[in-house]
Image: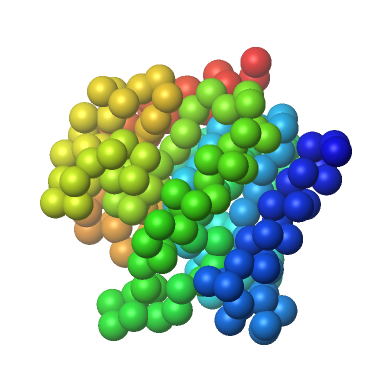
Length: 197
Protein backbone atom coordinates (compact mmCIF):
# COMPACT_ATOMS: atom_id res chain seq x y z
CA UNK A 1 0.00 0.00 0.00
CA UNK A 2 1.39 3.45 -0.93
CA UNK A 3 1.80 6.27 1.58
CA UNK A 4 -1.11 8.08 -0.03
CA UNK A 5 -3.33 5.01 0.35
CA UNK A 6 -2.25 4.50 3.96
CA UNK A 7 -3.01 8.13 4.81
CA UNK A 8 -6.40 7.82 3.11
CA UNK A 9 -7.12 4.70 5.19
CA UNK A 10 -6.44 6.62 8.43
CA UNK A 11 -8.59 9.51 7.16
CA UNK A 12 -11.48 7.07 6.64
CA UNK A 13 -10.89 5.53 10.09
CA UNK A 14 -11.13 8.96 11.70
CA UNK A 15 -14.41 9.62 9.90
CA UNK A 16 -15.75 6.18 10.90
CA UNK A 17 -14.80 6.56 14.56
CA UNK A 18 -18.03 6.64 16.66
CA UNK A 19 -16.63 9.64 18.58
CA UNK A 20 -16.75 11.62 15.33
CA UNK A 21 -20.12 10.33 14.14
CA UNK A 22 -21.98 13.62 14.65
CA UNK A 23 -19.54 15.34 12.27
CA UNK A 24 -19.45 12.57 9.66
CA UNK A 25 -23.27 12.44 9.60
CA UNK A 26 -23.28 16.16 8.74
CA UNK A 27 -20.76 15.59 5.94
CA UNK A 28 -17.94 17.30 7.89
CA UNK A 29 -14.49 15.78 7.28
CA UNK A 30 -11.54 15.97 9.68
CA UNK A 31 -9.26 18.94 8.97
CA UNK A 32 -5.50 18.36 9.10
CA UNK A 33 -2.55 18.09 6.69
CA UNK A 34 0.23 15.50 6.60
CA UNK A 35 2.71 15.20 3.74
CA UNK A 36 5.92 13.16 3.53
CA UNK A 37 7.76 16.34 2.44
CA UNK A 38 6.75 18.35 5.52
CA UNK A 39 9.59 19.85 7.55
CA UNK A 40 7.64 21.97 10.04
CA UNK A 41 4.73 20.67 12.09
CA UNK A 42 2.18 23.09 13.53
CA UNK A 43 0.09 21.77 16.40
CA UNK A 44 -2.75 24.10 17.30
CA UNK A 45 -5.99 23.83 19.22
CA UNK A 46 -8.81 22.88 16.81
CA UNK A 47 -10.19 24.29 13.58
CA UNK A 48 -12.34 27.39 13.97
CA UNK A 49 -15.78 27.56 12.40
CA UNK A 50 -14.47 29.47 9.37
CA UNK A 51 -11.65 26.96 8.83
CA UNK A 52 -14.07 24.04 9.03
CA UNK A 53 -16.57 25.69 6.67
CA UNK A 54 -13.94 26.67 4.07
CA UNK A 55 -11.85 23.49 4.53
CA UNK A 56 -8.76 25.72 4.89
CA UNK A 57 -6.88 25.54 8.20
CA UNK A 58 -5.59 28.76 9.80
CA UNK A 59 -7.86 30.69 7.42
CA UNK A 60 -8.56 33.61 9.74
CA UNK A 61 -6.82 36.57 11.46
CA UNK A 62 -5.03 34.13 13.81
CA UNK A 63 -3.58 32.37 10.76
CA UNK A 64 -2.50 35.70 9.29
CA UNK A 65 -0.69 36.49 12.54
CA UNK A 66 0.93 33.06 12.69
CA UNK A 67 2.26 33.40 9.15
CA UNK A 68 3.58 36.85 10.00
CA UNK A 69 5.30 35.46 13.10
CA UNK A 70 7.00 32.82 10.94
CA UNK A 71 7.76 35.24 8.10
CA UNK A 72 6.01 33.14 5.42
CA UNK A 73 3.35 34.10 2.88
CA UNK A 74 0.07 32.29 2.23
CA UNK A 75 1.37 30.59 -0.91
CA UNK A 76 4.35 29.05 0.93
CA UNK A 77 2.18 28.09 3.87
CA UNK A 78 -0.52 26.35 1.85
CA UNK A 79 1.26 25.13 -1.28
CA UNK A 80 4.86 24.28 -0.46
CA UNK A 81 3.97 20.95 1.23
CA UNK A 82 6.64 21.91 3.81
CA UNK A 83 4.07 22.43 6.59
CA UNK A 84 2.13 19.69 8.37
CA UNK A 85 -0.91 20.78 10.39
CA UNK A 86 -2.19 18.60 13.23
CA UNK A 87 -4.67 20.36 15.52
CA UNK A 88 -5.35 18.83 18.92
CA UNK A 89 -8.81 18.03 17.50
CA UNK A 90 -9.58 17.79 13.79
CA UNK A 91 -13.12 19.21 14.16
CA UNK A 92 -14.58 22.55 15.27
CA UNK A 93 -15.62 21.92 18.90
CA UNK A 94 -18.33 24.60 19.05
CA UNK A 95 -18.75 27.88 20.87
CA UNK A 96 -18.29 28.32 24.59
CA UNK A 97 -19.02 31.29 26.84
CA UNK A 98 -15.65 32.94 26.19
CA UNK A 99 -14.70 31.70 22.71
CA UNK A 100 -14.42 28.28 21.09
CA UNK A 101 -14.69 25.19 23.26
CA UNK A 102 -11.43 23.29 23.97
CA UNK A 103 -10.37 20.33 21.83
CA UNK A 104 -11.68 16.99 23.01
CA UNK A 105 -9.49 15.30 25.58
CA UNK A 106 -7.41 12.35 24.31
CA UNK A 107 -8.20 13.05 20.64
CA UNK A 108 -4.59 13.93 19.80
CA UNK A 109 -3.23 10.94 21.72
CA UNK A 110 -5.41 8.69 19.56
CA UNK A 111 -4.43 9.99 16.11
CA UNK A 112 -1.28 12.14 16.07
CA UNK A 113 1.32 9.41 16.51
CA UNK A 114 -0.14 7.30 13.71
CA UNK A 115 -0.20 10.22 11.29
CA UNK A 116 3.27 11.47 12.16
CA UNK A 117 4.77 8.19 10.94
CA UNK A 118 4.10 9.59 7.45
CA UNK A 119 5.97 12.86 8.03
CA UNK A 120 9.53 11.61 8.68
CA UNK A 121 11.27 14.87 7.72
CA UNK A 122 9.82 17.08 10.49
CA UNK A 123 12.62 19.21 11.93
CA UNK A 124 10.64 21.61 14.11
CA UNK A 125 7.27 21.40 15.84
CA UNK A 126 5.48 24.65 16.67
CA UNK A 127 3.24 24.19 19.69
CA UNK A 128 0.59 26.88 19.42
CA UNK A 129 -1.33 27.59 22.61
CA UNK A 130 -1.61 25.87 25.96
CA UNK A 131 -3.36 22.64 24.88
CA UNK A 132 -0.73 21.69 22.32
CA UNK A 133 2.15 22.87 24.50
CA UNK A 134 1.17 21.00 27.64
CA UNK A 135 0.28 17.82 25.75
CA UNK A 136 3.49 17.58 23.72
CA UNK A 137 5.81 18.73 26.49
CA UNK A 138 4.12 16.53 29.10
CA UNK A 139 3.47 19.47 31.42
CA UNK A 140 0.89 19.72 34.20
CA UNK A 141 -2.27 21.67 33.49
CA UNK A 142 -1.35 24.40 35.99
CA UNK A 143 1.90 25.22 34.13
CA UNK A 144 1.78 28.84 32.94
CA UNK A 145 2.08 29.29 29.17
CA UNK A 146 3.86 32.64 29.60
CA UNK A 147 6.64 30.95 31.57
CA UNK A 148 6.90 28.13 29.03
CA UNK A 149 7.15 30.51 26.06
CA UNK A 150 9.67 32.71 27.87
CA UNK A 151 11.77 29.59 28.44
CA UNK A 152 11.26 28.35 24.86
CA UNK A 153 14.96 27.62 24.26
CA UNK A 154 14.77 24.80 26.80
CA UNK A 155 12.55 22.86 24.37
CA UNK A 156 14.57 23.42 21.21
CA UNK A 157 15.56 22.13 18.73
CA UNK A 158 12.51 19.83 18.58
CA UNK A 159 9.74 22.02 19.96
CA UNK A 160 8.99 25.74 19.80
CA UNK A 161 6.16 26.70 22.20
CA UNK A 162 4.07 29.77 21.32
CA UNK A 163 1.05 31.63 22.62
CA UNK A 164 -2.00 31.54 20.38
CA UNK A 165 -1.77 34.13 17.58
CA UNK A 166 -5.33 35.32 18.16
CA UNK A 167 -5.76 39.10 17.80
CA UNK A 168 -7.09 38.97 21.38
CA UNK A 169 -3.54 38.19 22.52
CA UNK A 170 -2.30 41.67 21.59
CA UNK A 171 -2.79 42.77 25.22
CA UNK A 172 -0.62 39.85 26.36
CA UNK A 173 2.05 40.84 23.82
CA UNK A 174 2.06 44.44 25.03
CA UNK A 175 2.63 43.19 28.58
CA UNK A 176 5.39 40.84 27.44
CA UNK A 177 7.57 42.85 25.02
CA UNK A 178 10.29 40.16 25.11
CA UNK A 179 8.04 38.01 22.89
CA UNK A 180 8.28 40.42 19.92
CA UNK A 181 11.87 41.39 20.69
CA UNK A 182 13.42 37.95 21.26
CA UNK A 183 11.11 35.03 20.49
CA UNK A 184 9.68 35.99 17.09
CA UNK A 185 13.01 36.91 15.45
CA UNK A 186 14.39 33.51 16.51
CA UNK A 187 11.27 31.76 15.20
CA UNK A 188 11.56 33.48 11.80
CA UNK A 189 15.23 32.63 11.52
CA UNK A 190 14.67 28.96 12.33
CA UNK A 191 11.70 28.63 9.98
CA UNK A 192 13.57 30.27 7.09
CA UNK A 193 16.63 28.10 7.64
CA UNK A 194 14.54 24.92 7.53
CA UNK A 195 12.59 25.99 4.45
CA UNK A 196 15.75 26.94 2.57
CA UNK A 197 17.51 23.57 3.18
